Length: 376
Image (cartoon, rainbow, N blue to C red; front, side, top):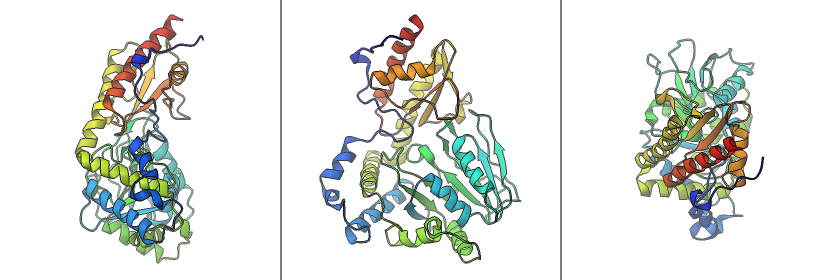
């Protein structure tokens, strides 16, 4: 395949469209080297300046997500993988229900299934590209699913299953939807996420919005005979979060970037603005896919389509790996499908930091590259 050069006037202003580590706004990077936060790097996370930063983030998340009275913002070291283990140890009492719409939901269910002190979970698994809907089951004490399946681009609403009792907790992995898709925080007992998606920061830390019922469950299990290593103890994480700190030294650069992003989101209109902005960008791609003869949205059901991660399925006339390489050669990066999905796809993030005009530009680049590939 000879080199295909996309004309410069078609290119977006920023080519970072990855659904993993995401595009970071320049203002977030500038916050690391100038302003009040610049002097925090290399200082103790147990002293007032960094603890004030954590407190500011907690207050900002409380406002951004309009948390109900009694809910607490909890943070801890690690990412979603650490949180799945922490929930397995600290929240699920006996048995859990998992609605699996992709890889991330499946990984949590697998972690629970391997716990020798729990019964085997109830798992409802959808075909890739379809949504698994949580339903009430009186044999479980917790329900779990991903708000947005980053691997497949499926969105599952944050809604307590009809018929679920107050004693059953709802655990929602915010994944790439957190700060990009609106939801009612009261519908979940623990809504958790890492900040490298819509918050435009690095990984290495998790955040959780926890209800009074979830906090009480954590206390009760911690007081039982169950062995819980301190690093994965949510009781330890809650106790440290109350003090505006984490068990071990956090990634301070991540905290600085998160605070900057929260302020930017709130200044622009909060979750209403963020939701509309992401929906506008994703609609541009879905509309393009439905009008292009060689591609379709991977998620067929309109209501299940993610506003923040768009998966595009190509006909055999177009090789998605070749198309991704053409884009990468022209500075548009990280649009490959999730590893292990094995489909002829591209996966494009439409996170809130992304300018909608750049998504429109991307469709022009796709048209140009597809025509060039087919013409070879």
